[in-house]
Length: 317
Image (cartoon, rainbow, N blue to C red; front, side, top):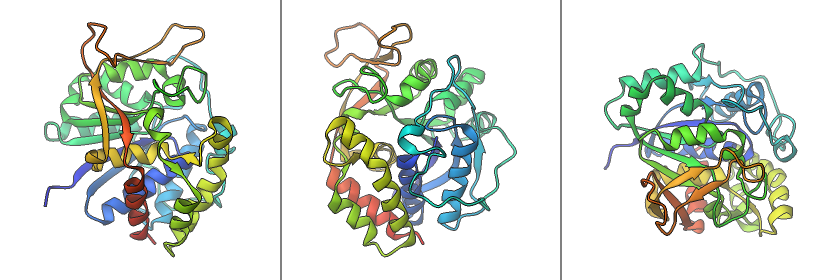
């Protein structure tokens, strides 16, 4: 059996982030990952709420000692833009909120990332980034040597073949902190990008929602309630058959790369355009002379993705 990958999730929960975090806890129970920590970043809602949400999720899976670190409260340069209109005022519409037992770690997420990556064996840690990239950009900027510990950055962000979901040109995570996205894309670590191009092919249909409810677990029911609240926005916006499950795609891609297909190419982020700020520029046809810096994912086995999600939820309380 291959060694479980060491995984840190950098996140702004968020309903689909919640699905990704619950999936990761289930994957850890299955022995498929060594789930090391959660770092939080302002994005879908403000830092205090996303951090509370991450801690609540650890309570739900009966992991009250799981390490959660709070990070950047705003993007590197721009003011914070949130998606409270999609995810609800506190980020987890459809869930009953409570004061979490899981404590917040006293170290800032950026300091934690720098320290653990510096001490890690070379190319041993996988970072799964499913929010704006502010924390990771700050870490690799403050301590470029910490990149040595990164096996891979698997990030949910960007769009090229699909329209944007925050502006006509831009996906939310890249739009919120495009400067951070540019820094991460230039950091030299192996990068896999899971954009809207692929997550729009992984939609929560009624049958898949019922599959989560029928796990018979408390977390299966909770997740179905959360996703039922969340999916309406993207169904209305894009005319999809269900809400796209963006962030679990990134976790699944880190653990089951054979489930996904794409192409290695040069990827850049627009930092200047008044209409295109945060847009992904993907050199799909190799027309630029820019160095290849990422693998851009376009295809997923969606049925298998939801099978793995459901199986992971079955391992939770």
